[in-house]
Amino acid sequence: MKKIIFLLLILFTTVLNVKAEEIKRITVGNKDAKITIIAFESLTCSHCANFHKNVFPELKKEFLDTGIARIEFRHFPLDIAAFNASKVAQCKNDGNSDILESLYVNQQKWVKGSSIQEANENLQKFLKNEGFVIDFDSCVNNKEIEDFVLNDRIDGAKNFKVSSTPTIIINNKKFEKALTYKNLKKALEKLI
Image 1: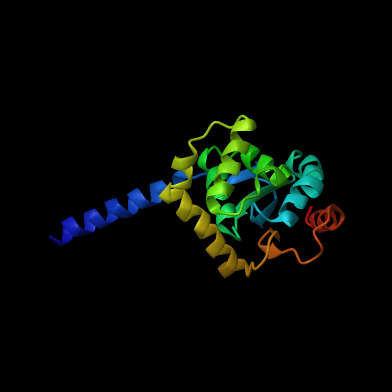
Image 2 (image 1 turned 120 degrees about the vertical axis):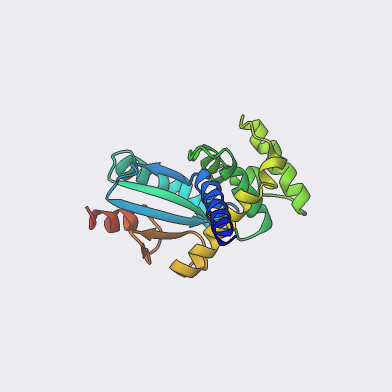
């Protein structure tokens, strides 16, 4: 009987691990890069949108596309609209940042509404207008993706003391300066 319980426990643990591994982290850059940047962000955060509009393009051009660094986007939703948008961005599960980038760059087009239902409707309309084909309800109600997003937030608070967004971590150290491309570039050049 002990052997059967032990085997069932191993099987159950293996199944849980497989499900967790099936969800791909949204990343840009060479997976073997010397520098790993982690960005804890909330999709309704205007400062995060500013990062994606004014800092990320240069970062991508000089450090990510050249293989020097990679960036991992981690979810740190600050409200229910950001939480649902994070689940949608993660839902396609291909590791690609297209939906995420579009949501940040066009944040003012979808972040509006006096209720979560209205915010969800605006998000759905925006995604459709941008040509993203996803099953919105399935994405928002997916328990594995929900846990994945919440675990990012827990990890950020617990391991990196994240309390606001965006918070940038470079090679497991919190970036403490103002988040401008100039400051970020200086920090990254010291690690090359």
